[in-house]
Length: 487
Ligand SMILES: NC(=O)C1=CN([C@@H]2O[C@H](COP(=O)(O)OP(=O)(O)OC[C@H]3O[C@@H](n4cnc5c(N)ncnc54)[C@H](OP(=O)(O)O)[C@@H]3O)[C@@H](O)[C@H]2O)[C@@H](O)CC1
Ligand SMILES: [K+]
Image 1 (cartoon, rainbow, N blue to C red):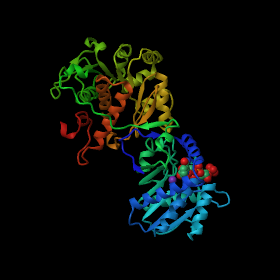
Image 2: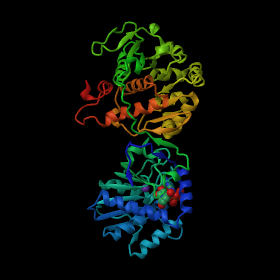
Image 3: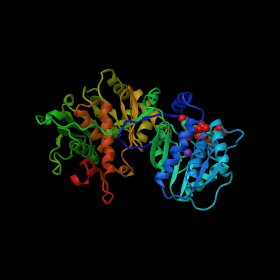
Image 4: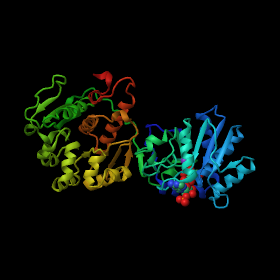
């Protein structure tokens, strides 16, 4: 069992793949073994997170998730805990593994109740719903028990998934369990890490139940977790030209700040030189706070020799430069208003898609609303399946897509998508998206592929927020500078 941190590219398997693996593994083991392993590991984690808990409520659902709970209760009872076990199943109709667990617990003399318990519990174990959850709203006792678990206010350990959370998408039913810990079994599920997953699952643990890495490797994952990128030591004998040039193109009248944030972020993320091509003719020609930035008119920029970050603060006028940017042979990051303009214009969309045929690096960085415009669907549909939406955009436009939001998804046509788990809600403030675009630009300028550049920048952007002092406000300006202590 392990606590999940962004240290490894863990594979993420959805419901279908998890069931395939379960089936393959179960064939090699005596009956009920997987559920017995599941119950034991749940009981061990319960003990680890609440070592002094005496009174434990184990709420068990009608399927095999409930069976895991019954198995866990058996161990906890053996270890001297006072377990209150409630079950929504029916011994005559329960799945075979759950029926066996029910019989074992009954034979151990544990009372299995059907009514909601009363009083306070030191720990609740939520074994109501796992990968078998359907999108219908829980009703009756299931709904009552979810409300009661959430009302306890103490630690809640969810078995496999917080009940009500969909394993593939991270969507929840309106009523769902709010866990402090979730122990994902056999596989890690993508829904734990994106959309509502991060807010409902708490700390995420994983136990492969004896499935070795090569067994997990037999089924293609839906996604992988982003992991801390390797930091390359700079060669002593290098110079600014070794790290590439970035040109930020944007900053229409009244919106120069966005372009300056992206430029500053590119600079602090290691680009060799950073140019700013502002679309406002009357804009500043130098930034005294950041004298390293070189201001140029868009017309005078040599687009062929630099990485372009296009759209930050661009307004509708960005439309006038997009054809030139998209037909350049340079790596390109497309953000904000540039995305909105492309969404409106099928000719620009064709120009964007044509870059793939020329093997030109292109990264789109939409937030869900921009993504909705690009795919001409609703934001609700985008958020309903973020992995699928990011992949659809990557396929449609033939490039790398960074779908921002809780559990940012990075997708490209050739690779398994990645979900990022660094970052937090402090990033939900003006300008942080411009900073990310600049950071992606710096990674592209350093020579990384579009997908790698996006993964590295997204990780670092989130990591800065995760290591930010809780006493200090997180502002985009300081984020661009690499953190509050850096300027
Ligand atoms: N896979 C593995 O490798 C292993 C799996 N294991 C465990 O098994 C779990 C999967 O078990 P599972 O397939 O029985 O599904 P599960 O989540 O218990 O739910 C099905 C039941 O819930 C009901 N129900 C569904 N939605 C509902 C709703 N919204 N509101 C109300 N009710 C709803 C549904 O009713 P139905 O829709 O059929 O009427 C059915 O009765 C998995 O997550 C893991 O914990 C481990 O033991 C070992 C290895
Ligand atoms: K559960």
